[in-house]
Image (cartoon, rainbow, N blue to C red; front, top):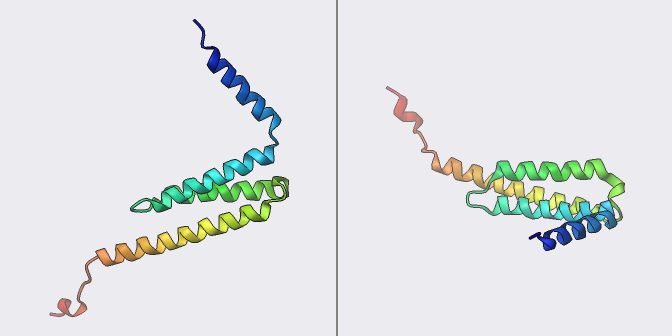
Length: 112
């Protein structure tokens, strides 16, 4: 018995990929990456390393594609800038939390 459904699904997927303009697929993937970065940043604690990797890939996509990505390039740049701002805020919050968790030493206690 063969799985005709999976063959049909695979063929439908290939047809979709053949017929969809590259800039449309890349736009979709760009926003999936943005969502993925947001998920990393919304974690508790924020996954700054994972988010930074995803943000770097988003930036590379825009740098490589530039105007070839189509008429929504400014929208993609705005989305990247926004997720970068969220990353900066999450980084600052993580640093503040780390500093508050570190015990303060009293400089006068070392005098002897």
